[in-house]
Image (cartoon, rainbow over the protein chains, first blue to last red):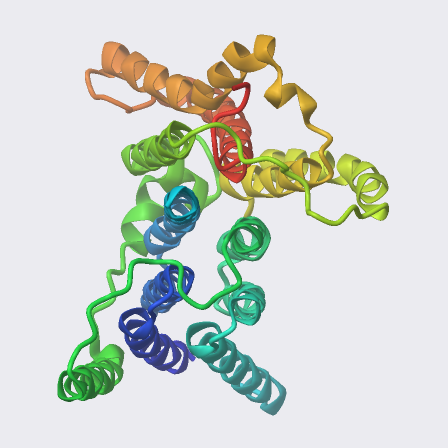
Length: 94
Length: 308
């Protein structure tokens, strides 16, 4: 079953990379980065399942990764909103 | 494996790929964001299937809950057009085809090579040092004792994100959704006891079973964001609460560093906890971390510095 989900993770990785470079919209880029992060997390957790039992270290890496991902998403979204508001102010002044 | 499990896995993977595709290639922003939130909910199911309940709990609260709220709020503030960034330089079509083809080839290569990847396989080593960590659940042991430095730095990254978001300007107003929802305050009041009960249970569980600071902080933070949506957290904006708010935001990191320095004094190694006090100290750090994570998630949701 690990191999099956690892294949899904690899497919998602490929899709997310294409989506990331194809997107013109900043919000779509942030979404693509998040999908890419989920795909990498999935890959890590599938690697954690070995014959000798489940390895907790990748699980911990994914847990911290999820929290870091939400922090970077919030920071990127805040920057996007501010950039847009500045641009609108400039256009209003003109 | 039974037929039912196979068909469930097949449906789950199919749904994941379809929702991922929609989130990535759907032109309308709102539709992409909603597909992404559903994608995260399915991811939580996948974590359950892969027997990673800790991650499932955190993903359901953070991935589908808080990230979704962040994205939807940002969506309300961006113009309805298709592009919000600087207009990027358009490449010649040849280059674009070349890029897509090379991405497809690397994906195919990744699929071919993934089953042969060496597994890290630290399960045995972790099992061997478990008695010296003071807790019974392997994920909590790794998170707060064996690899505590990673967790410490992760909290620092999160605090840095809060500082970055707050440094951009005052809180964006109006905070609640543009349309007044009469049911929202009542609903958040009704759900609030649950949002306190569930994290407390998860914290208590963390020492011996799936749970702990991360899922607890995530659930508490998701509840907090719901309160912010209902405009029930007035104290965060008030001037005389600002110092306490900042103190609470850094409390998780500060206590963690103090424990690390205490370990340095007692055993000579930064962040190494003597077995006698390990359980108690891990519990204390977990509580402070859960509160900090919850408050930081709420702080990020404000999209600016409160009290300005």
